[in-house]
Length: 132
Length: 132
Image 1 (cartoon, each protein chain N blue to C red):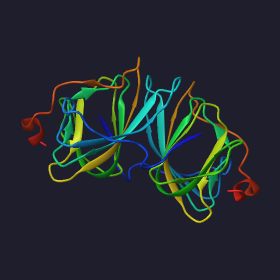
Image 2: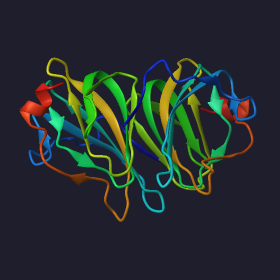
Image 3: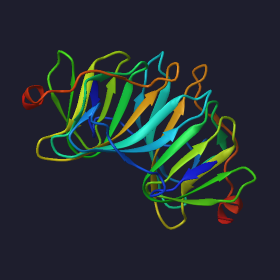
């Protein structure tokens, strides 16, 4: 049994290569092989969002607080609320983030395939974001 | 992209075969193959706890609220707090639950091996629980 206490887990600012705006990432867990699940708490300031991306084995988001946005390529921008759970299938191009007015925190859960949990793509432009 | 809204996910009372006391289980997600991660939000009333059990690929708990207890076989009973993240390796016999005085809610995350995420064992007796 290993306990990582609240406050003992370093967080970092999301890279400008993969995020727009201010995003705080706190790694929560990374199960060692043969397990493969990885989780992080991610907090988006208003207006902040991920770049477009895909996950080799999909991704689950559990929205913890605030109001956010999520979109799969070709679909509508959906508003997501605390308590909502969102699933993106393997390879589905998508993004997620805060609304323009409110911050949003979610737990993001992915499984690693060949050591990789995400493939990053181009940023979500202001024009794409404003459609939301 | 699939969104399960808060309030649209049925919850159920934990079975007396696997839990002592009042435990509310709300399934959050079950990623379809080739993914294999499963998650649930579990709320324990004061005094309530799981039976002893193991997980074939381990288990991660993210404590969301309250104050709880967790113990691996042969180890001390540990008090766990909101924000703590606990990892039990594959096959490690353990239990978790609320304290006698306070409820506790955690998200529990497991990976399925051959369709199975847990092996249930004997209850945590009142004598074992009172040692905490």
